[in-house]
Length: 175
Image (cartoon, rainbow, N blue to C red):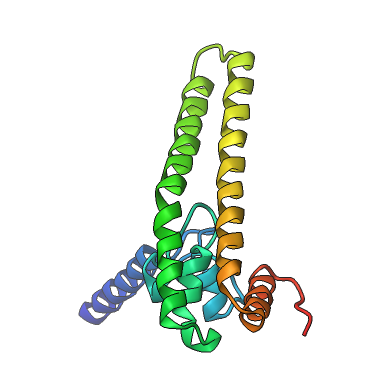
């Protein structure tokens, strides 16, 4: 009887501990989506923000300058180029923060309006247009930053940068 009680207790403990630590269906843990390698998980933001210098900027991976600095040896960037890249990053940082702030405010206003008893469709349209304009502003800033960065690079470095960017986006890069 005591052995049966011990076995039943052990089985109960094993079942409850495995249920406690089991993942909920449809949720991703640190391992990210299935069949995705380590670098893919890091690129898609499935690991911590500070992991291997992969910060997040908005919805996508870290900004282009951080990636260039991280790979400065492979790109053979000079110290002057790295310093100029940091200057560009500091120049654009407040603009990105301001644009992101606008997007967050519009998201909050949209949620607030949608929770109203009778949401006003014209107000929702106005909020959505403002939100899309703020997102477009962020995108334009990202393009301007990239153009300034490309002015600093020599042709070989530009080719490597474009190759990496295509590869990160899942496109096929031409050699």
